[in-house]
Image 1 (cartoon, rainbow, N blue to C red):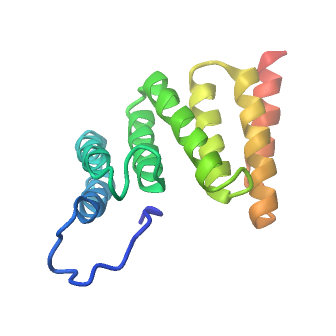
Image 2: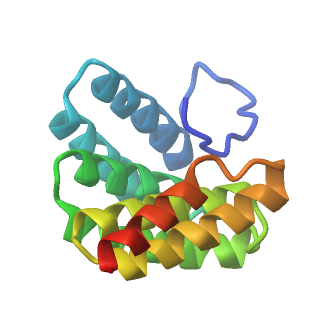
Image 3: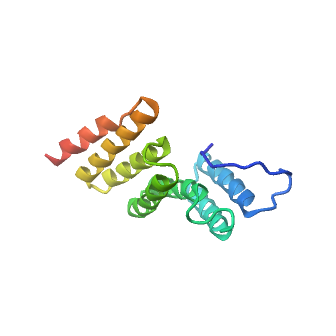
Length: 161
């Protein structure tokens, strides 16, 4: 499933905090998406975001839990071809992940890759190429593999010529 940060609950059968609710909602949204309903998944991911925001004591809008869930929201918006909305969310996620995880973390690179994909679909090829390059740099440092980000960057530059 998603890389949602999990904590040990002393009694897993008793979801006593909003964090537990957010985790359960993220899991349910993932299931909706796997069953082919991005619209239902988006709705549930947004409910998870609301729970995370409400639990400001443990989570809030500056937490990795918020970043993970907002990334999932952006992913669903992208799947639904709502690229401008996805871009806004991914820019927030990239800022949060840079701050929380650091700019050399794989998940930060993955966020840059998703942002590059969205920009590509918005027709902003030169900007997209830069993000694909940045994603490749981060992914290569983190795992030794730039995935296809370098090829994507080159393809975007070719579209600009």
